[in-house]
Length: 161
Image (cartoon, helix red, strand yellow):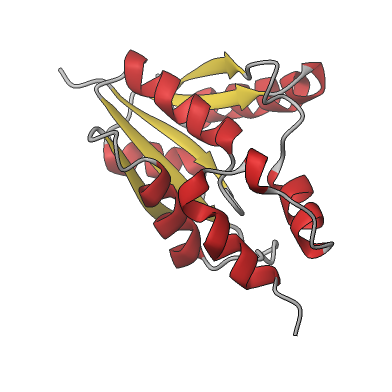
C-alpha cells in the first residue's frame, strides 16, 4: 500500500524551511502532495498558480513530490487523494497548540487521519513567508531564505516601479 501524505499551506512564497520539510517527508512517505490551499479569506501576494510553479521548481529533484491546489477543508483533500497522513512543520512551541488543535479536528472530521509533526531545523525556525515578503518589499536581500530557483520570480513581484 502506498503511503501518501499531504503537506498543506499557503506557501506564499515557498521558503527553504518548507522545502526542508517536504524533503524530510519524502523520506518517510512514498508520495508527498504539497497542497496549496486556497483560502478566500486571505489575499495572497502570489497567485495559486505562481505558488504551484515555485513549489514545482523547488522540488524538481524529488520525483515523488507533487504540488496541487485545493479549495475547501484539508480533510476533503485528504479524502480526495487517499492520503493517510497530514504533515505539519513546527517552527517553535508557539506553533504547537494551534497545530495540535487542527490535528484533533482533522481526526474527528475524518477518522483515521493522522498528523505527523516535523520540527523545523534550528537554522530555518525563524523563516516565514510573511517575513520573506516583508524583506523583499523593502528591497533587501531575501535570497538566503528561499530556493535559489525562485529568487527572480519573487524579485519581479516586488520590483519598484
